[in-house]
Image (cartoon, rainbow, N blue to C red; front, side):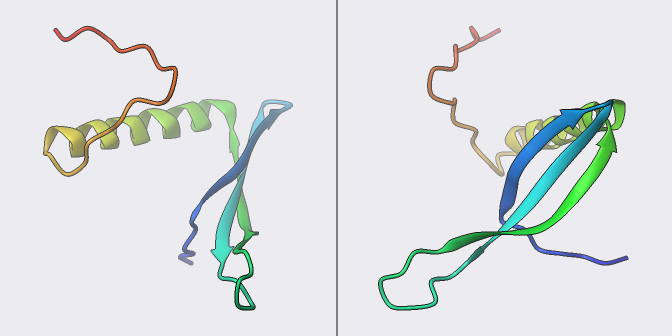
Length: 85
């Protein structure tokens, strides 16, 4: 199995029942005062049901890490806060 480090997801596109996820890495500036460059590092292609399952699994992992105190999730701007149960 090949492993590849990525800095994030550049784009997600859904077309014809497939999900295309473009992965990116940040390249440091090549000269003093230059800007870092975001480069394409690869792509994932999944069926929509598998993409939905992947998103659900990742959400569950985030919830588990939050419950264990490993991370603290901050609300997104303009996100409506859910009342505490």
